[in-house]
Image (cartoon, rainbow, N blue to C red; front, side, top):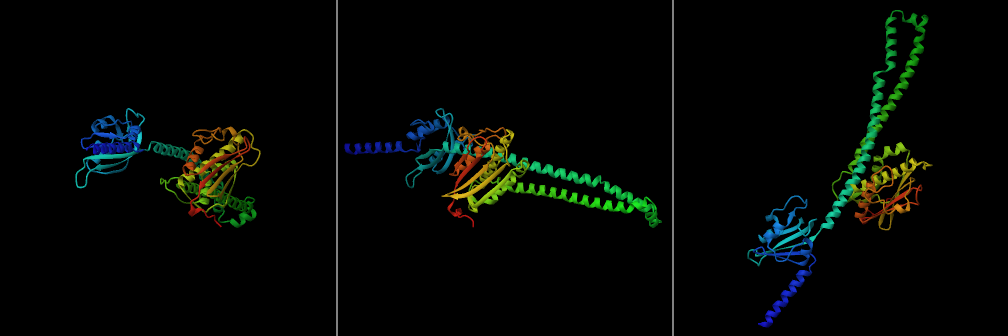
Length: 424
């Protein structure tokens, strides 16, 4: 008998050692609601061993993932387990006196029951996912901040295009409503009407009538020139209207709420980003060059964030040119070059400008939230771009020889095997 008791005690000690060695939190409740925590559970949520479920639910503040909506006691995974119900992958936010800042956990609950009998206990196993959730929140915030940068650029360029359309429409209205040629034509009509009976003699012998022919020729020439000007104005209005449509179409690529990757045409993505900043570039005389000959036709990527990254990199290059021009150091044609090519298992995307450049001491800091050395710009665009690249398993690196030498933003994104073939 003694040997049996000793063996049972040994088995119990072994099970308790295993119970406490599990890295996930484990809480077991008996049918009376008495709780047993393993060490990981106590560490994660600050629980104490051998407490009662009713006391524990009063001591804890337990919320859904939103950190605001309390979870009803009857919906807690452990309470459901005691009712014989299973719970899978339920995320909760728990705040306790020991952890006032709160923790996010992902929990699974199961009833404890012998075959064919009601539950006589329950168990939940959970892990701390706080770091993951906060990283996701930080990434979402960075994406939102970068999106604001892009939307500011979009609205600025649409505003410029709308202003141009309004000016064009105003010009058309001015020419059509207050047209001096119409007044001249009306005067000619009155002259013809007044000399309807002696028109032939009037134009041959009367000094004023002899001016009708040159008047008509000049009027016709002026009508031709005015018509040309009207056509040019209509073409400008049409061009700016088409540009607005292009911007809106390109902007659709920034609206996707899906975070899954899809096949994105690389050249179309770059073209769309350039359309977004087209007016801003044109007003500064910035020349652009795109070289994607050695890049894949399509890449598998999260579309809206990739498009946002492109616009933010282009906007950053433009602001660098502005900064150098403002200081009087821009002595050549401003230019921005976009290159894309494959290197090993990565798509390399480079945006190069001949702007103000980056001093060596700032190379490691430029991707920080809100960091900027430029008078214009918030520093959020590059931060958002860097977060997207690193969260995609890629790398982003600034290259510059210092002030006044321009800079290159080099992005490396992992290529999906299905999209790694370069176009012919």
